[in-house]
Length: 215
Image: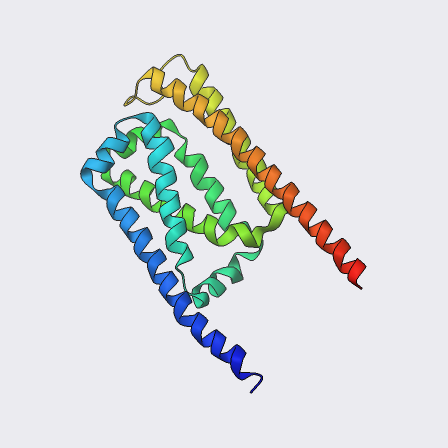
């Protein structure tokens, strides 16, 4: 009888987890469908800032939401080749680097194949981040951000300092604004992660002290 209660709790938890996964999958699919609507897509791609700073993160977030709906069996298979999240974070860093190349922004506006590749890559980037971030731990996370954030900041400085348009489809003032935004995003993301990592370290040390005191 003592083991019946935990088994019953697990039995109730499984349908709840399945419903949660379905809701996540529906939310991700709905977000992608909304972003793919021609008026929404055209509005987001009409400006460089909305293209890079709104559409890109929205697609990454939609991919992350879809990944959170993956069944446990699929997550286990992914984890076998994504040890410590290294493969997923490496792929995400590559996608983010390519996403900041001005020529690709131009091509995505005029070539449907590049546009489809952009969407696929950003959705996959979000999924990879979602499945890799927690297994990565502080060290691998720091290595990832230590590469991506300086790259983002350098791209932002280049966008600001360029005296000619790097994207033929967008104005020079938009380019400068995006450059400033990228620098601030890089600084803010790095600072937020450092604060979070410090807080986790303090909590872990406190829990360790309590455990030793209780022993």
